[in-house]
Length: 520
Image (cartoon, rainbow, N blue to C red; front, top):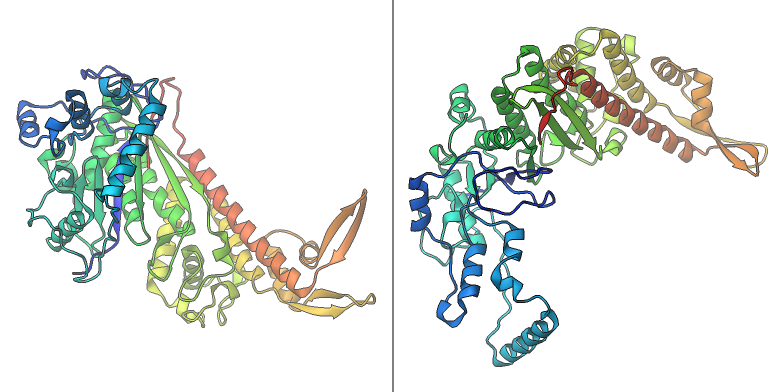
């Protein structure tokens, strides 16, 4: 059976001073995040812990009581009872080492050498997780029943994990816990796991009351934030196509339900932020039709009472090179295709100097050779309308929206500017623009003078000892400058959109109360 890409999701406290929680534990270090659940332990859960004790040493009688107890603490499976690293460092067994590090290190080296000579120590190699059809290796342990939390299994190796995920995936059970972590396997089709009924099931519910679900992660983060008055962070990681983008959407959706914004308009705006930013930052790749080509960090802001009051987004490492070049089988950022199809539907291509017969160079590839390949795509037209609605709901003005369209069209026009080589009187090659009409269209869309744009593309200045020398660009250099301008324009536009969103969704702190955050 084929195993799709796997993603892991975890919740932690990025910066939090530990408050009184009824647990006899030492204060936590802010640099060591840990999941704190808002629910108290019941007697039934305590009895379950006794039925599933932590692993022990193979021959405990050969070791001291202190060492046995230390190992037992390290291997506690229940994250609610698991001691913190600082607690372990204060353990009686570890404190015996203080001042004897060098002596013990020498003894260990001697012991390892003796065992190696006796052949008792064998080097082990971790096997790869084979996820292709029928190629993964069966675990040497006996066949295990399905487990919603793999951390409760007695045998936990790579083969066991793969086997369990395969079995659950075959039953449409795409979510599985491993202790504090949620593993999500992309089903690559729509499921009925995200209905309003499912959303209600995971509101203030104990984790063991329902099957593993991403809504449970959102609820744990939210309840921990409210109960412990501390910020929470949800980390989503996985390979391309694992479902990270969709998972972020689902988390934001559930957190807005839990936050119960007083302003329904604010709730709608927060839900639309991801869709708008992803139209500008996502693109089609060989293995993923909606691959995020930038890093995203979303902060949802809540009051001390748990009401969502705003959001802020940060972007990292936008793949600007995709604007001017993309590999075989890949495409430019989604927004270029959406705007082209949308403007064509409204008969406004001419207004933005876009051709209705030949696609721009920056959009041309083996799949897009004619304009009908873009303007005839119904999905692009629908997305254009949706993105324009996102702009309006979030709070962008019509003037700002028109500026965004002009800059995008200006970038596409700039890519069609062509250069020819001209021999100068000094026998050095210089470039000249061969299609001035395209240059003038680009300058008009960017609201600059055509002669200034021409000079910027075909020449550059060198300052030496206070003297400014203007030198001509070769054809190759001019093309590089043109592409660099396209990338810079898109990067600045993307950054401006993110900053504008943050200003429009900034919470009103007139009440003077401090905000709390759930970060994704």
